[in-house]
Length: 260
Image 1 (cartoon, rainbow, N blue to C red):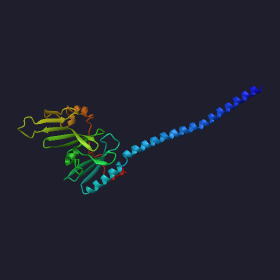
Image 2: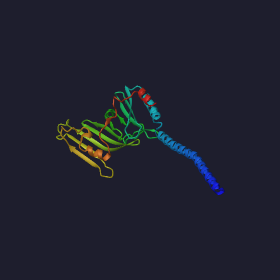
Image 3: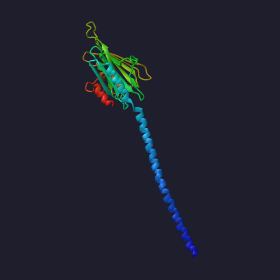
Image 4: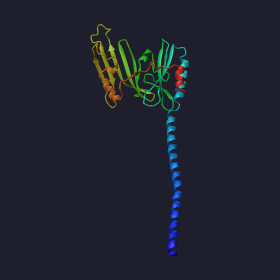
């Protein structure tokens, strides 16, 4: 009988010990879960802070540029600003415009993560030179989110469109298109033509020269048959937008409000 009571007592004590261990472990498990959750939250917070740190400051940097531009061109007939999305990041590019009838200028800045930088081609590598001086800038265009800048110029009877790929603040020329209309020259028996030149990566330069009829509407590079080759080679579509869109041009007060 005593032996039986002893066994029962021992069994009860073991049961109580087990319950005690389970009870003592449960709070630790909850504390560990809370700790793990806090660690995940802290990691996500740090990640968000790092992302914010990379993009923080662009409004302040642009605002300084806008303020300086406004002071320098205070007496111009018109001064304007735009925010456009040239490349694929979440920070827009800043467009600066001035026009006093005698002189016209267009400039673009991008924020590279550390500072606002003036977009430059090989032709305007000087920081102080405008990206597109003269009236030709009014025809300049870009391909949204593709980092493609289309600069237009020319002379009597000739239109030149140069395509540039945006790499940070550097604009690298990837093609040049020339449309020629020499119909003003009575002695020219073949007055209409166009040429295209580009160099695919790792390949030889492609040069196209064609005579066309007066009815061929190839003034715009996007309209020529070879435009598809350019799109395939450089991974974009010729759905371009004019850089200067009068419906999007902002005054100094309007751009200042957006940059707050």
